[in-house]
Image 1: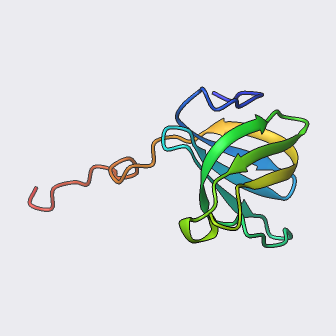
Image 2: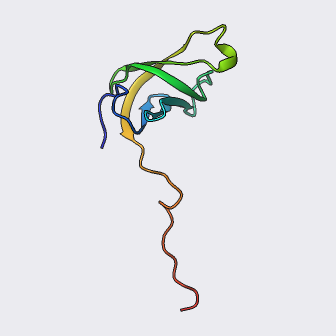
Length: 110
């Protein structure tokens, strides 16, 4: 089921689709990964980062969240922030476990 806002308290995994990119939020693990769209510029947030806080994440507005730096960066950087383009949709990620897309095959001996 789609939602209009993420706060971080929902748990689960979500795809936040913006005009230019997508962002994969795992609110159980408290991580976020930016997935740049075809015409989007690459950023240093195009990797999985620990999520500190979702400041704002609502359909129709720009998203804003804070992330932790890598251990080797923490001496120089307190946190990273991301300001997304306008959010178009917020959708839950359906379980993509290994058995989910496997259809039963007929037994070749029959």
